[in-house]
Image 1: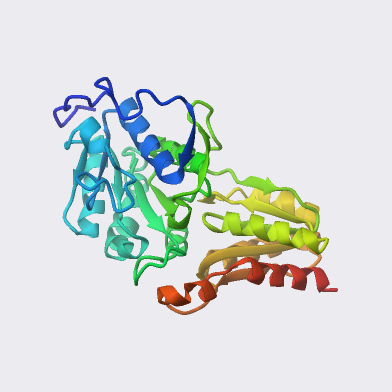
Image 2: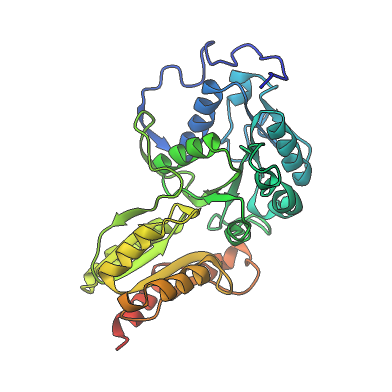
Length: 349
């Protein structure tokens, strides 16, 4: 594909790039891991562009894109107007012309103005062209709650995107997973909605950028157990692991499955875990009605009915708009809400 912009100095990463002296294995926060994934993808492919509101000059609200404009130039990392529909529309047009756009929607709740572009065009373009035109667009969206933010800054939008055929939807739970899920997303030919759990941004972990992590479409068993399978993703994986520790005091053994990829879903891993335990609880932050847990519970009930010792239960947010910051701890599903479901599942005859 013909290059349509002049490559700025340092675009190839040769002029003292941001991570020139950083070894492959480092202790990183999730913010640092995502930043490095963007840097490494841009260094590897001149077609990769990063853009959105305040991503260049400011480095993003959470400093996730800090240093990219200085390293690669403002033709490859640039600020846009406050216009989410235009941001996604620009990304679609650039992808058609051979670029690999990685736009940022500043906060989860701000994705609504871009909804029409995503659903009507981004998700459908490859099928509309019978596969002749790839749509390698990765939309990064800081997502979910737990940070004491104001209205429209703590939404769980995953169900909208998973319901939209043509999109891949992923969400990491750790810095290492954040790095590799983003690298795989940027390399994909299909559009990917990449949901970043804001309250895990400052989690720290060893990240190995030389050892490929699990691809899109694979779940991970984060803790093995025998009594109940807990199925969750993104920010609540840590909550589930804490609940597993608390459950062990009562003699309950929880298996924690981090779904990672919501579309495509690794149902084989889900089925294997439920087959071992006979019980399942799904946990997510979004409202209960028609949340992702509803689909997962229905599918488990349909396909794994004879493996179940109890109905599939759900620990979720409530069917209300996201509350003010001072009430969010009461609204979000936590250890107690999950353990209540676990106890009910274990006590069912």
